[in-house]
Image (cartoon, rainbow, N blue to C red; front, side, top):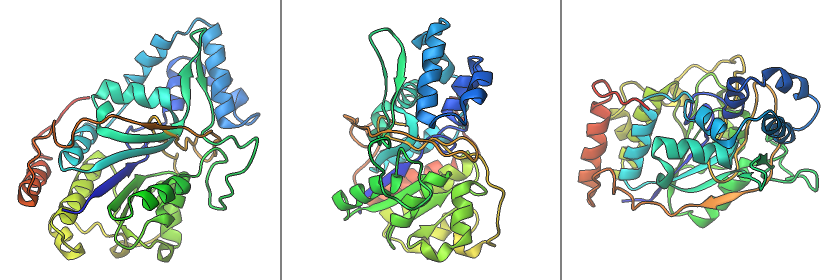
Length: 331
């Protein structure tokens, strides 16, 4: 079986909203957010907001409680668990922050499923205040990318590093925002990109699909997320080509077969994880600094009943795909 690396954005990809906006709105700081929005870089603004929250008596536990209520489609967690059970190496590349991502993953029971999280550092200081720093310190130097990446992070550079280290494996990349376009350009002919339809990364890809070397498979919601992702994993495990992969789809999801049109730009997704991520408010690019977290994962398949042979893995994924219409998990 070929090795598979699955890289996820976080906001509006794993979770169904922007984690920064969610915390700000739920804790009643929307007005201050709007006042600060155009006065400083995104990460600096979030750090200031965390300071104001601390001074108003908002505790770390209050923030964590809000994060535990964040919306997520009920098929996302089962899809991630199934991908891990199939032996995939799961990673996160996001412009959120480490504290938000780790808190959410822990609450969902997914902390040990990811081997690496690239995102903006977030930590609690000695005064009990949450600090948020940029993944790349853009005040000292530019990351030099000319694609539409926020100044605090180029996800394409993260993917380039992963490809250099794991070049013998197949990559699947899932995302929705402007910052997910650069890594999509880095993928190779044998890889797969899963842009969220009608979101900014889809708009950019649809405007110039010939720039994308990898195979393109759209998704719209959590059910699509699970179906398309597990179908691709199953096809790779079976050493199948796209024609074989299409057998497992309820419909043809190949981007090239779909009409290409311009779409209204929608809010961009936030990434979640101990490493760095690209957090973007609708139509507004963010800034961040460098941070990577390597996790001690549970053995692949240890929570999913993985067996060693490709046929058993194929059966596992087939059962998961067939159960989509029957099983519903609440998280």
